[in-house]
Length: 396
Ligand code: AMP
Image (cartoon, rainbow, N blue to C red; front, side, top):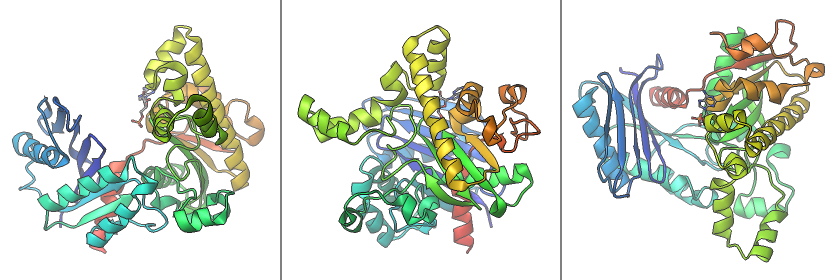
């Protein structure tokens, strides 16, 4: 039986896909269709013959998936020749209901639809991806892999907000956490790099990409995480504020007459690094910083300070820490962030090796040999994790 999984990540105006060998992690092909519904959409497909790009109007997610399948036909690999084991779907919010990857049927679609109020920006798009893939691959098992599932092990004292208890009971207002697929993958990889059993390890894992979060992982189980009911809470991100005094909302309404939607939009897409420095791409931010831009420097400082604050807090939550693990675009690539965020923590047993940190070797270790806490750089691979979880589920 084949291990090939088509992994689909549907956004509100985009469709990302990868064809993954779940055994080896090899991506046989991947692609991205952006600006779905606009007059000029953009499609990119990378297969065995290299990369192909095109720009045509693609009106819907159904048209987008059809365009992706056409790209497989034209540029390969041919899906007819490869036996697919499953289609794996990234689903952002699984609420309290889903703690594991789950086979998609009508009941699951109804349950994920019920969760839309908790993730109005993400779940509708994920559902659209599921709907069109079920229509196009009616005979294949389809598996939903939830970003929140890994954090369903959070203890009540970590996931409960100090608000009237009926807010949780009646409206599901609690912390859920996200990036779970990445944490699951990276924790396992870190244990392998350290040559230790994951069940014996206490880890602080920092997922620093466009979205940023941090988790305390004890024995492979999430016990704390920085994102909350939505992916807005916690660290400073590319365009999201992270932690903010909740009274700011009322102030914006009363003093500026802002609507709820305006506030949502500002905090999700105009804040974070972009809000502080006008730039959410970390590479651009670094260029601005190097050129002496004071706003870029402040944005960098706020970003690193927030990380340091969480590392200290999660150290206290865990009691002892075996390793701090950096992953995702910024975490894997910015030696500056790693150095500044962990600066001055030697008394906690955290010692970065500047040479290793500047250019991490294959094993990803960037701490000194005498550091009490290992510091690692581990590339994440959410697509592989989704493919693996999907295959494990359909194989039983
Ligand atoms: P991700 O969401 O994991 O794709 O991460 C995207 C973020 O990683 C963007 O802010 C990129 O600018 C940043 N990034 C990617 N490559 C690098 C790099 N070489 N150095 C610094 N930041 C990077």
